[in-house]
Image (tube, rainbow, N blue to C red):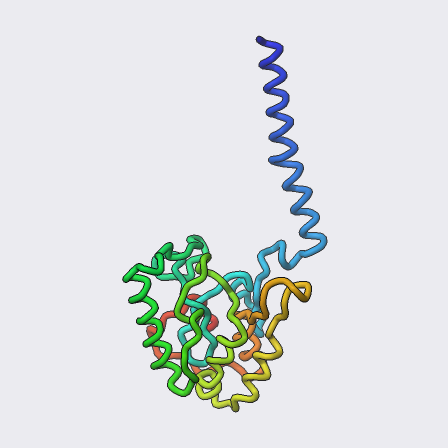
Length: 209
């Protein structure tokens, strides 16, 4: 019995050291050497070099001068990186329908010149609640509002969107997409930051509105 117990303890200790210490250290070291930016969290910085978020996580933008991501069900108020989740509401849920109808009404009010219908992804949350990307179509749908709010021509804003549209991974995986945070940062770098919104306007990241 003692012999069997000793073997079990040694096996357990060896497993803990290899899988709980050596393997994580090796993988982390390899990631830091090959992909240092991504290994550190894929931080996104503004024109002053200040970290304003991660390009992997969506965040809320309340100003009409910025492109807005999909709605979020992560956390109580959405866009909570510590509570990634979807709403788990089914297609027959009245709460889901009411939420989509409210989001639709808000989008139509904020984008009176945009074409109809409103892209479905702009009124529905992703499974994670933190999807940082929009389709090119849903991004272009917002161009009129952003251009008007910044006093720019639509063509200039569309050019920035086109320049930040990512193709399919490896040429065949997924769909073309636009990272909303990186797009908004590019607008500020190219055209400057818009005037500050009225006091009390909610935003998830202080440097951006």
